[in-house]
Image 1 (cartoon, rainbow, N blue to C red):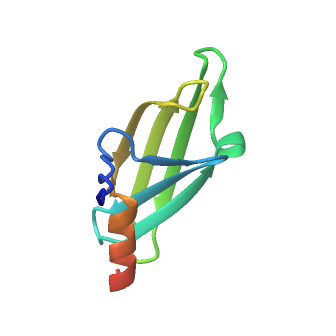
Image 2: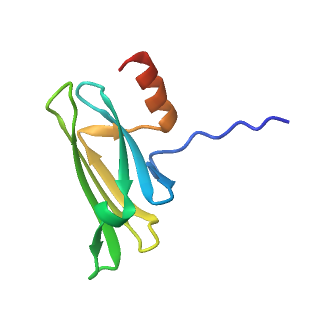
Length: 105
């Protein structure tokens, strides 16, 4: 029996947890350029000691247009996602990124 892997639902959690890093895939709303970002848990997440959580604020600018993609996320102390938002772009799955990259987008 062959099991097909279920596609990740990026509307619930766009981050791929890979040990010490979180991997994020996104697409620019303006030009369609795709991005892959590796976020190091120990250095790129800011500790919010007052609220007992980690905060991520990232901004991406592609090579095809000057559009800014802003990503903000909040994580619990165990790095579980609490909330996230994006402006100027959309989250995509790893498979969508690989397809776009193969097409030369």
